[in-house]
Each structure stands twice: as C-alpha cells, then as structure tokens.
Image (tube, rainbow, N blue to C red; front, side):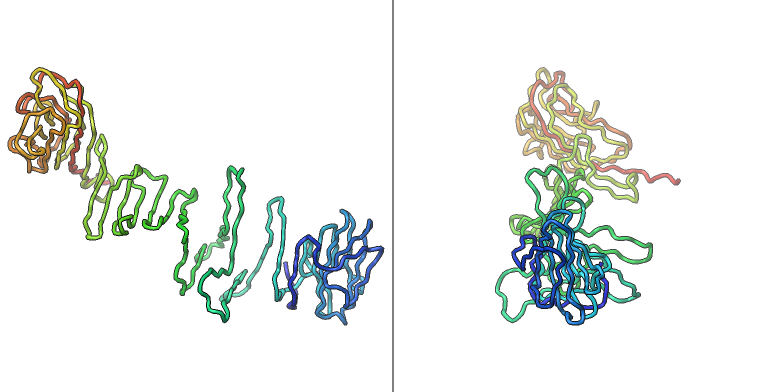
Length: 457
C-alpha cells in the first residue's frame, strides 16, 4: 500500500525485468556507501555473504533515485540503510527495489519486496513502466487497493486515458486499456476472462451496483466486430450473436421455442423464432405478414393460450403425425372436454393397401366414420372420392368442407372424442371390413379448447 505525501518524478524509462541488461554491476566485498553521482540502476552481487548498502545523505540527494537488485545466492541479504543507519529495506537474492529521496528521507517506492511502511502516496512516471511477474500460485501481478472517505466526491481506483495528438488518424484502433489471456492446448476446464467484474460488497444501503457503466457520447456500449457472441447466464447458456446478416438471441437450455432471429440472409427483412430443431415457428416479413410454423405433436401442441392462468381461458392446439395404419381403426388423438375442431388436413404419403370392402379412408370416431373427413377429389377440396392412392387428400376448414362429410368441423363438443384414421367402405361413411396392410398417411388437426375458469381459493 502506497502512503506518504510526495510525487516521485522518474524522468526516464524503467526496465523492471530480470535480465540485468541495464545498470552497473558490482561485486560487494563489504559495506558499500553510495554517492549522488553513482549510477541510477545498480546490480549487486554480495559475493557469498550478506552485505549492507548505505544510501547518500538526504540533504544533498533530493530527487535522486536508485534501482537496486540483488543477484546473489539465496540467503545473501543486502540490507539498505540511510545515512543514519535506519533500515529501509532488505533484499534477498533475486529481489529488487527502487529507492527515492525527497530531500528529507529515503523510501522504497517500488519493488519485489517492499516494506509496507516505506512508500509514497503517488508516483509520477514520465515514461514506460515494464513489469514482468511470474505467478506460480493464486495471486495478482498488480494489486491496487484504494479507499475513499467522502459523501459525494467522484473517485476511481484506476483512471486510464489515451489522447490522439496532432496527426489526423486514417485507420487503426486506439485502446486505453488492453488485456488478454493465454490458454494451453491441454486445458480441460476453467474459464479465461480478459476482464472480470468481481462480486461487489453490498453494505445493504439503497445503491445500485453496475458491472459496466457506459457514459454518454459513445457510439456503442459494447462492440464485437468479429462476430463474437455475447454470453449470458451463469453457465453461458444464453447468447446474443451476429453472423454478418442475422442477429440471433439463443437459449440453449430451453425446450421448444428457444431462438429468436432478427434478419435473414435474404436481406435482414424478417424477424422469426425457431424451435430447438431449427424450424421456423413464427415469422414477420418486411411487409408485416405474420406466419406461424410448427408441426404440432402427436398429443396436440398448445400453439396459443389466452387466460389469466395456465389452466383457464382459451387454447389453440395442433396435432400432426405421420402414421402407418395397420388396423381398421388407428387412433390419432383424444380431443379433450370442451373442444372445437377448426381444421383437418390429410395426405396419403405412401399408397394404402386394404382388402375386402375397405375401399377408401376416413377420419372420424367409432360410429361416425367420416365426421372429420374422408378422401375427396380436387386436392381434398372437392366432392367425396374413394381412393387409397398416394396423394389422395382431405382439406377442411371450420365448416368450409365438401358436402355430406366432416359434419362436426367448427362445432363445439362438450365431451371428449377419440379421433381415428379408419379404413372405410365405398363412400367413406361406414367402416370397411379389412385392415390396412401397408402405406402411410400424414394427418394434421387444429382445434380450440375452452378451459373453465379456475376455482376460487
């Protein structure tokens, strides 16, 4: 910790490394007393014994500094004293320190082993400070501990500023603070952070703790020009990323709807949400057209819910599945209490095969075989037409269906219904007598559900 009252004007570049390339090297045969005309950087070899180094008298040494380094063997201590024989510091082998005189006293102002009471309030360094530190355990290469005792004053622990001078820049980046870390190919865990906003100490008052405070005047609060994602969450499982054309908000641990994308490769005109599998669930194009995707589920996926709780109100659900029927009646889904089927679509993917009176197919319930549809001509929109061929279809929407089929489309049903894909006789209104032996069909059913209001607790 630096304490005291004087600025230290070091008017030269300091090379605080361990190579001994700068300064005068001396071998000590005994006690050495320095004068004000000695070299500023002094490298001493104690030559097999601990030695004493005396600094010049303070009265004639105002503004003088010395960087002293001990290059002896372990245990050969150089004790540094002032002219009154008061000890200022002790340097073991490999240690160094900078000593400065303000005309009244000598103090150690920097070094590898500085006594806590021998330091200045601040150092005014006009030059480059080059420091090399090799840590082999937990610690800091540099540690700054600042306190403030004031009710309103603005304070900074570290204030860094870089100023562009007379030459007008045409390219290149100017950075006030630059930091990086280096990992190894063999690393199997851990996190490397160039900057960390450590957890604050909250004293319990009504204040706001901010990890990064960006003042007005900046063009961007955070820039990642090389398409580096921004990670959120304590497991970095939510990200914001840009690949040059699309801005993506992604939550890797969510199920179902996890990704929102703004823009697309066609010209950044769409906003859409995709599913875990990558399919588009919701899209708004540049003209404001809203499109909903999603294939539904085999049990009926909730696509929309309105209500003050998750158990009351209105729901719109979607069932979609591709099946290979192998019976006269193959279960699709059970519609819940209080439902209304609003749309039914079906298409034979692979030609169906059945014997006996089974000549076509229908969608309905036991006892009312074609209540929700049957094979029809004209892309499933025309009149009933018996068919087991590939691409035979039914298309019905809330009462707008071919005559005499799908009579319950758009009607409210209070009870449950077990909807089935049925091997039907000619005309589709009755079940055939033989099961399907091969083939496949894709069926989609959209329906609304009325959920009673929650009970009063």
